[in-house]
Image 1: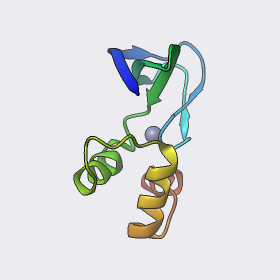
Image 2: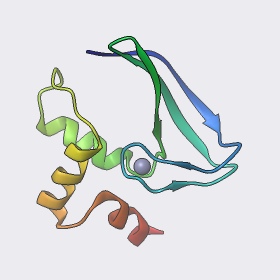
Image 3: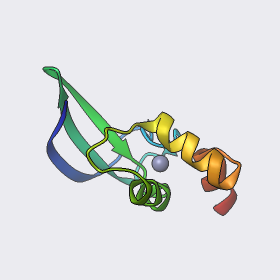
Image 4: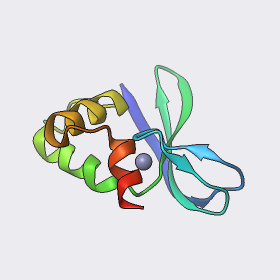
Length: 93
Ligand SMILES: [Zn+2]
């Protein structure tokens, strides 16, 4: 089971990759960082913000008790838009 122990908005000090859509979070960009614990292992889940609307759409379709990850988001976007989330975001830029 995943537990989110802290959520915060952080300005990137170096380049990161979004945990949801795998797009680039550039240095200086503000992103959301969830500090999570899963089976005793601490990790960060990073959100670039640009894919949030797709994540929200996905959450409307599924049971909130289910655990979802980036693979689920990719499948959701491929199913609905015919494209991967990263490609959808890059088209908007
Ligand atoms: Zn993203």
